[in-house]
Length: 437
Ligand code: UGA
Image: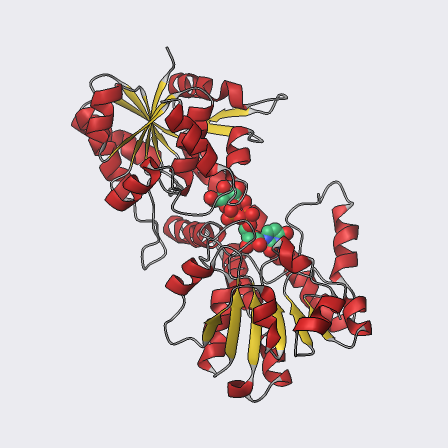
């Protein structure tokens, strides 16, 4: 008989984890308290865009490996599962700290409703020390009933399913006995000697924040070099090649652009800073990355104002709204920051994104001067400038000869360095890249 797992929270991480555990042969109960979301996922409708997830959900439902519940009590009664993965949200509080109320509520539900001893495995990104705090909380209600562990998730939006099914490593933090038990779940996911890293829960929690800070720092460092590259007449694309060919540096997260966005890097950096402050640790490196990245999103703004001093008669074709390709997530997207800043000055936008139009509409200020278009050609038609924010493949394929037929303007602001500066300049366009002259 297949092993049973409950996943609490059908957000990004929870739904991917649940569907992937199902596809690996586990019997999985997914708990979601939001009735609309629950209804939608029961019908295999994923409430966000993530390649491959909907098919996996359909398959899991058809094979009767996935079942859905509106509360943990019902899931525990029905499945009597031993492993409870907690993937509920930890939204940012106004002071930058993570709000743990959903995680705590999930733990209490688990202690009060499980019949036997269970493993409560935290996948949500939580502040350092949370697992230990929650272990105490559980033991205060019923000693020894629940073992709390931390199992940080490293999947990326856009490639979440393959990241989960074939992780580079799995990290489990907790007591040695509990870590052994939970680690066994992941054996079939780890191919080619990819490591299962068994550590204490505090280290697991800090490793998650540390990994995101490290990746974000690489993005900020390459963007820092890009700023100097623009100023000195160097080309960041050439510099990237030099850096990436050094095996000590490595090739990933070294592309200059409009800074990082998404729900993870920005939030985790703020979390990291908050924790440093609480521990009396200097956070200046993390603080600099945070501030620098906010500025990076707006790197073209001054140039646009200089090139087009008459704001109200300037229309900008905004290609890409999502914080990166293959997602409809616009949280902390550079597009939001740019529209907010330039709209307030009177600039107008023709916006298009293959997947993120609705999420953008819901997130941008109502009074922003944005007209939504059905394709890039429509966005470009009456625009004075092209501003590429997200490197969707369909935008990367736009060539100078295509622009000749559908674009009224002359200015191209390439926020992801995807276009050939030479080809555009030769065709008479005024080209700006990030860190390219
Ligand atoms: C990130 C981490 O990569 C995951 O390992 C982690 O699990 C996740 O956060 C999380 O904590 O949940 P994600 O936010 O989906 O994943 O996005 P990434 O693909 O890492 O990109 C983050 C941002 O950095 C994007 O805005 C991207 O455009 C930007 N980026 C990335 C660059 O500007 N340059 C690069 O070279 C790489």
